[in-house]
Every structure is written in C-alpha cells, then in structure tokens.
Length: 213
Image 1 (tube, helix red, strand yellow):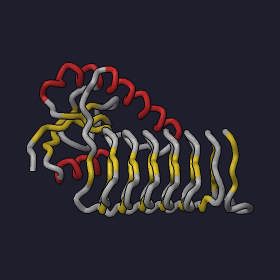
Image 2 (image 1 turned 135 degrees about the vertical axis):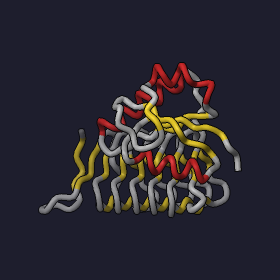
Image 3 (image 1 turned 90 degrees about the horizontal axis):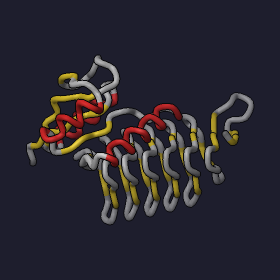
C-alpha cells in the first residue's frame, strides 16, 4: 500500500465514505476543504483558494460532494472545472470490497464504493460515482460526473450521459441510452431511451413517467 496524503473537497456525510475508501487504498486523509466550516473528516482548512495554496502538501485531491440533485451535480461540475484549470491530480478510488472486472476503464476522480460490481469492459467517466452495491453491466458507459446511487442496476451496453443521476434501486435495462443531465428517480425501471435533460420519476398514478426539463 502507498502512504500518501489526500485532500478532500466537501465536508458532508459523503466525505466519510470517500475517506474510508481512500484510506483502504493507502492514502492518509487529514484535511477537508469546504464551503462550510463544519466537516466530517479531519481538519477544516478553508476552501478552494486555501487548497490551491496548500497543494504541495498532497499527492492528490478527492471530490467528496455528493451528486444527489441537479444543483449538487452542477456544483460538482464547477469544482471539476476548477480542478482542471489548476491541474490538480485526482486519483480514481476503488474500494477493495468492490468487484471490478477485466477491461474496465476508470477516468480521473472516479469513485467506486463498497459492494459495487462493474462488469467486463465497462467505462466509468471522470469523477463519476458508483455508490454502494450498484451493478454496472458489461460494456456499459457511465458519463463524466454522473452518480449511480446505491443498489442501482445499469444493464449491459447502456450509455448513461454526463452530469446525470440514477437514483437508488433504479434499473436501466440493457442497451438503453440515458441522455446528458438526465435524472432517474428512486426505484424507477427505465424501459426506453431518456433524452438529454429528461427525468423519470415514480408517481402514484404513473409509476414510470418521462419528462423533458
């Protein structure tokens, strides 16, 4: 195992999950940079300007802001753009308790949590999140900055666009395309393609409904 220092951006509960996996991957996590002074992991060190000043202390940075809504995903996107502008290294983090098959490609900053299964030749984009117990089918592609929530299922050869959210327990059947910035609600089963900016939400009168916007 390595023994390198990793800085976190984001001080909420999701940062605890990121920190645990980072530590299992051999990183030391002692500092959090956040827009709020209350943090869950290590010491609060300020926000982005302070991180930039401290960058020499760290082997890398982990984005620990959860993608739980359109607003949160947009906030993540803005932080990713900042990280790119300043060329800060962002390692992918894969739990040793996940199963990642041969031929899987992981982008910078990707996070794979405990209990995840990623099947053969899948591609995980930059800064995507595959959260606890999710399953990614063979040859599926998860776009940059997209969150696959706990226990979600993405079928083989699916294409999930960038900056999206697939909710807990949701299922996307094999071969389907979900567009960029799309939102799939908790427990939904997606049976057809979803357009860019589309949404699929569970409703009492219509369990699967797709809307633009």
